Length: 131
Image (cartoon, rainbow, N blue to C red; front, side):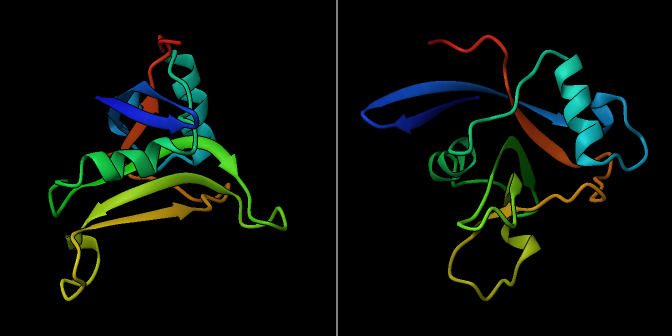
């Protein structure tokens, strides 16, 4: 996939790769740190924080039972607490069907003890980004 990111004043494309946790060689439930270490070994990079929200805007037709987790550089709130380390977009299967929209976007803390199953789909940046 190619995502267009808005880094004012210019718009640029960003190449991303989708990988299941199991495709990275994990068959248990690795932590986010273990996943990020493996991604580095595979030559991939963490996404800039704006890639997840831009993906959600550009690809709003995500299947209702699919979820994507974007590996990203950490962002912190005003007090440097609640550091978001992943950004997730989910189809409506994961939330109430009564909500008036079908795509949900969430920044997640991903504490060191948070683990992910082998079918979790992560999105990372390709190492060969255009400048």
